[in-house]
Image (cartoon, rainbow, N blue to C red):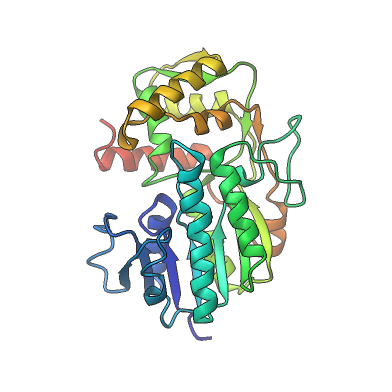
Length: 324
């Protein structure tokens, strides 16, 4: 069977980097990145063609789509001060990509959405793909709108909703790792909290399996490693892997929101510890969903527990100079 010619949009992001590295080990890949994106990881790989463009502004997309069979859309804004910052990237950017694909007659897309597009568990119930979407953050709301744009387009699509993703190149969990390396970690609110996780290598394998099995029948899939973790156990596992004791400091949600406001107003993106948008999600009691549909229909087989994945992740942080 002829290999599909693939364009990865958002290749310089966390998931995008891991995906392109894995795909390029198997075949040629075209990537679309912003003009100032760091492509050091890719530039010496003759199996990767690099195109520059801007989804929000709508330029560079048509050129990158030349001779492409399918698109993997990983681009997203995960940190921002206002709803419109998220909307311009996550929603308008997706609309521009869809328009260009339809004009170029590129019919297939894998869209990397998020559990945030559905919203948290209500009453600690496990959500699935049939649940009503009630996102609570700007990020989640704009990803939900992007899902709607894809569903209402002429494209044959698969929407993948990963839960909290971690692994090499991730900077979000690095914040917690650094704090726990110092012996403490803040927790927003009180009471038990539960969540699902997915190691980036398992998520990448899921995306590639969708492509290889040509599952473009307008489906949506939650993706997690099949385990439910308590927030405490996640922090304890990180601390144990680091060889550190940890002190958990509970912060009322109202105070955390004020700290997030100060971060949003006073700090540049590179120095933000947390934003109000992220605090809205962290204050919830449960982010738990079912991966049964992905297992049954795609043959998804997660291989990494958090205990195993965090060892590889912390090892990568140390080798890359992010952690002493």
